[in-house]
Image 1 (cartoon, one colour):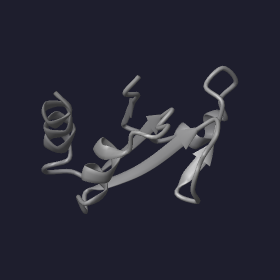
Image 2 (cartoon, rainbow, N blue to C red):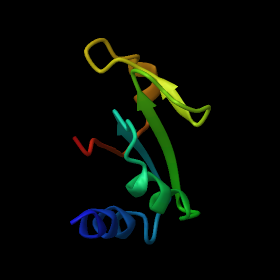
Image 3 (cartoon, rainbow, N blue to C red):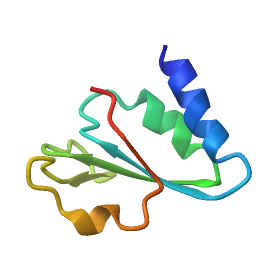
Image 4 (spheres, helix red, strand yellow):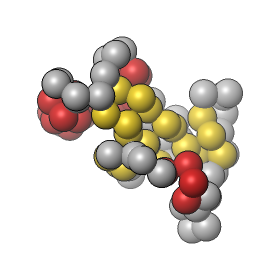
Length: 78
């Protein structure tokens, strides 16, 4: 199932650079990991409790909207 979702997102970045944001990444980083390998994708990962420096702290109940400026696709796995 995640492979199909990942393929869909990768298709969106096939011919043009795309900026994406994953909201609430939590401990499931498989989709973000696959997307990060694509040179056409700039990926922002957010979570309320980030567990590493690659994830930006953000609370979706009170989001920092400036993080999502110019983002083409916002997605959440859960």
